[in-house]
Each structure stands twice: as structure tokens, then as C-alpha cells.
Length: 88
Image 1 (spheres, helix red, strand yellow):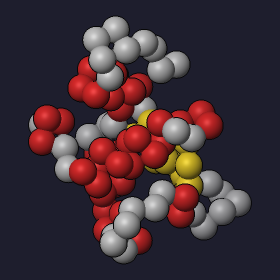
Image 2: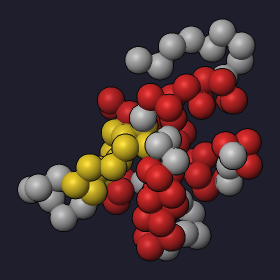
Image 3: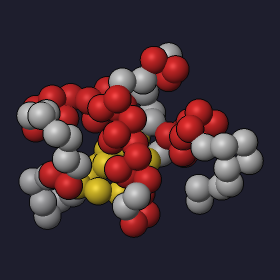
């Protein structure tokens, strides 16, 4: 359930919220005291839950992740004040 979201998962969603087009490469997502493999696993789990979209960029070794519509809806519903606006 999304209500039991871990701090690291929420930090990834909020990081994407602050990026242009809600998109970033995995290497741009910095979590303190978290190894890259753990960050990647958290992103994979968020992707499985459809809160972020993952795309492999052909010209780069790195994956890009972006906040999905479901992820935006989740943040508005759970973390923004009522009527917090529209993240489109």
C-alpha cells in the first residue's frame, strides 16, 4: 500500500517532482547513505507499483526515470494540502 511508503521512496518521488518534466537519470537521484544498487532497487519497486516510469536511453548506459501520472496523483492526494493543485 502507498500509505506505508518508506522515506527513501518518498524522497525519490519528491526529487522527480523538482526536476524538469519530472524526469531524471538514475545517477541524478542522490539518497544519503544509500548505495547505487539499493537506489536502483527502490526505483524498480516504484516502477513495479507504477509510481514512476523507467526508460532505458539508447545513447546512455543510464536509465531515466520519471514521475508517472499515478505517482503525481499519489503525491497530490497524500502530501499536498487539499486542493493542492494539478501537477501536469
